[in-house]
Length: 182
Image (cartoon, rainbow, N blue to C red; front, side, top):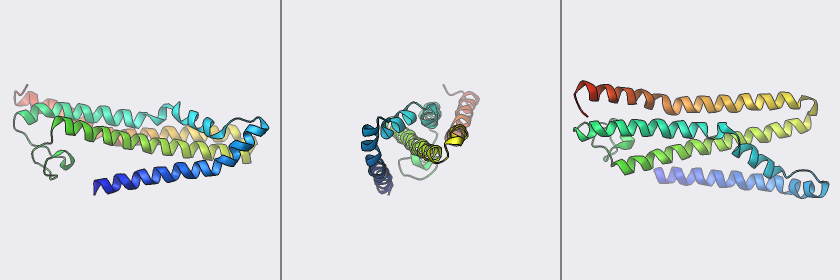
């Protein structure tokens, strides 16, 4: 089931990229003739150099790694994992998967957040560019609205992806202290 979802996600990404290339290929050719900048290159740079592209993935990865690391002490003392995604059986409150398998799952989750951010930031950049070309007198407004949207998306996804894990880190440390587990 998970492999099917990954395949769908990859297919969607590939279709999206091909669609962008198909839409902007004629523009690129014209831009080279007119002396204008390369649209695809400009969009790529805008997304790659935008810190909101990386914030959700970074916070997701960091919070989950901290949660997973602090849980190891409890697992070694015989405690079970509540999150079904991190159990051998796939059911909650069961034996946890290996530390390496957990790290692999965490990396997969972080890459999914990175993919979401790239798609969001790229689509925002495209909308911003199209609107600015259609309404050049409002170029600054579209730029500001684009930043507001990207920052809001990044903040929301970052918070939702990390808050529970940061709280779990505190609970894990508190339980380890309470029961004298080091």
